[in-house]
Length: 188
Image (cartoon, rainbow, N blue to C red; front, side, top):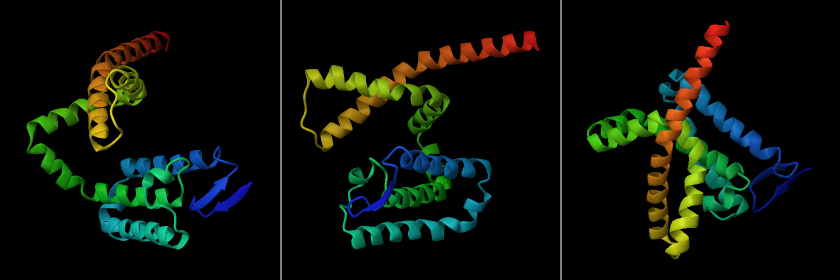
């Protein structure tokens, strides 16, 4: 079933079971294409795509009058979220040179960036566990009103717990991968 929803700003195809994978596959393909072949992105395509994405998202918000808050468009992601997210991705990748220059001026930021780059896989796999641990342990003992301070505290706690959990997980993953490579080499 395909239908148009005035609040949703987009098509829902077979409920959310088909639409979300299509949306996230698009985002993956966009990032993968940039990773494999960044030259089209460096030819100032962001000058067109970025503002066009923001303009289309704005037009969708005005024409269909949904709430402009992204949190209302995430589950399931709609066209407003898709266009805005694409515009932000193009905007940030266009500023990559300046962002890296800024990071290189601060040793602490460079060290944090290197750490998160080195442990990306384990952080990806364990951040949900870190969110759960922070929710169950910290916020059950120290309940807070859900406001801006709550968000900052939660982000800092989740980043800290994720950083601690990711180190042993990365070491275990490296050990398993090296054992698999050695066993394949002996069989091959």
